[in-house]
Amino acid sequence: MAEENTTKDSAPAEKEEKKAAKPAAPKKAKPEKVEDKPFADFIHQDYLPALKSALTSQGLEDVEVVLEKQKILVSGLGSNTDCWQVIGRWPAGKRQFNIYFPKADIAGPRAFSCSDIGAKPSTLEPFLIDERKITLKLLVFGVLQRLNGQKWLSPN
Image (cartoon, rainbow, N blue to C red; front, side, top):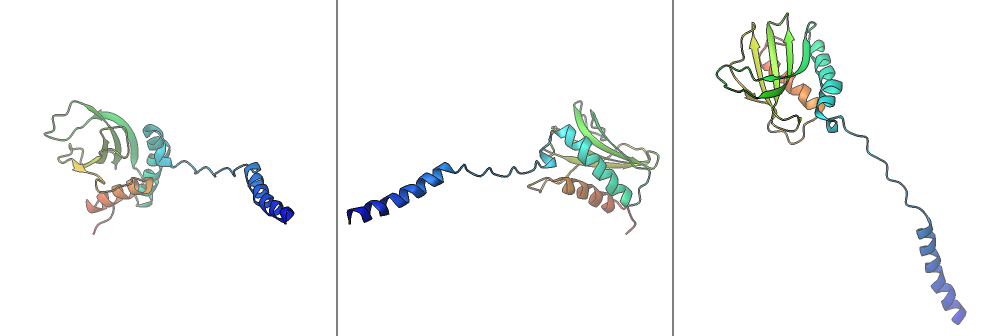
């Protein structure tokens, strides 16, 4: 009987040794989200091309979309600080929209303005403020939705 006990007792010990000898399987690295890139990289590499493509698919052939750091040019706003802005212009600069990023962070505060016939924008509106998670698709959709509300993409 003593032999049976040692055999039974050694079996669990052998299983533990085998478990310890096996290296832990490496966890699969999650691919980096485009939204996790540094601000300028995300805007230039991902957002501007996606936004231009979406606007072109809506029929805006001559749209220009750029990222610039400049003062907020809203009428009556006495801002002297520079702010990152995604600026979209068409046709021939007669219509323009701006998305403002006061901090170089897509998840930070954001604002939107638009102007027609080369005038300064008269209103600065919050942009996607109720969203918990900001994604590339959401940023593109937000602009399309706002411009469609302005009736600049298609007449309602």
